[in-house]
Amino acid sequence: MKRTREIEKGSEIKSAIEELSMLIKLKPTGDNHDRTTVHIPTRPFMYVCNLVIQVLDKIGPTMTVLRQDIDQNIQRLKMLCDSDPSMYSNLVEILKKEADEGGARKGASCSKASVWLARSLDFTVALLERLVADPGQEMEKLVEESYNVTLKPWHGWISSAAYKVALKLVPDNKTLIDLLMPKDETSDTLKEDVQTLISLLVPFLEEIHSVLVSHQIDVSCPLYKVSLLCFWLLRSFLFFHVGDIVRFG
Image 1: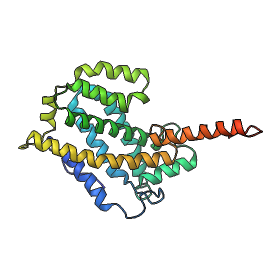
Image 2: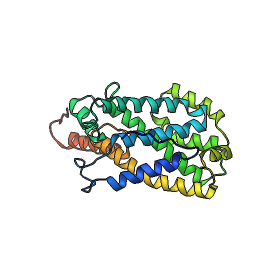
Image 3: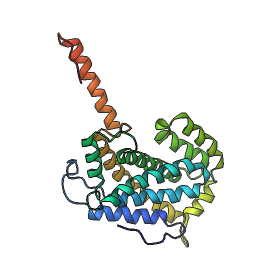
Image 4: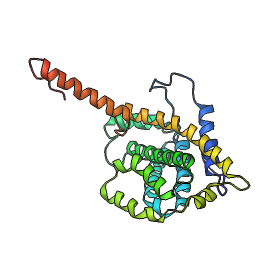
């Protein structure tokens, strides 16, 4: 699905709401817990991520590193989609293919790109939630808290140091809200739009993370950590209660 429409000032949030709402309407019926029937349209996923880039641009140089990462990961997915639009229209099929071939967690895979795009959306949700819950809080603190709980655990010291320096350049709350607010709308309307976007993004991200976990790609998800814990508990039990040491491959 090619995007030709121009996004007016402050309408990124509304555009994201429109896109996610359309995904829900077009979502195939079936068992949501059956990973073989899950359909996550690749291009709409990239489109939502691209809207995040436009929001980050408004925050300023603070988000330059994140913006570049998102853009690079979008381009990686786009190149694959452009190579065969019908085959790669479903993000789940891309993840499955790379997992089956053993390359999902290697190099510049589209699976790794999807993980980082999902984490970037996690950051966006965390920031918007904090902005709605405490609009009087300093923007620097809101961005820092959101970064700490979503992206920092997976960044090296160089990226973390870059964010720490750039935090000093974030705009104040009023400036950012004015930039996000569409023409002829109020702060109350913006707040409602943000809450709507969050309500749509959260289940969308949960589904993406669930698929990533099912292919053992996303180790950031709590479900993966629980599975890993169960594995080690079972291994310890067998070690101490079985005569011969059971070795796992």
